[in-house]
Length: 112
Image 1 (cartoon, rainbow, N blue to C red):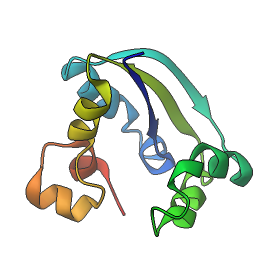
Image 2 (cartoon, rainbow, N blue to C red):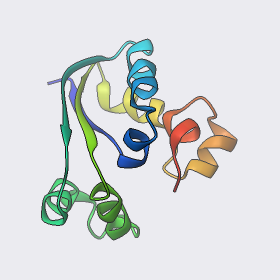
Image 3 (cartoon, rainbow, N blue to C red):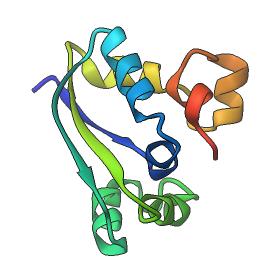
């Protein structure tokens, strides 16, 4: 209830920017009620993203990205959390996010 799952991808973890992303989430008034560092294998990443299979053309590349190193998985809480957190994340394409919503997570930290 009033929670969603968020993943900090391996490229952010490897670059040492996870703390900045977490602080950005907290600064926007979200509660992080659970957090764990995971190393995902391909079957687990595919299972985690199953609802996007056939929806996102880049499904397989996202799965591959999640298996490239450790990622941080968080449970995020707030009223109307899904809509509010999607707004904080920004447009799916980081280049579009940079142009339209430069203060979002994807605009600041997204690569592809």
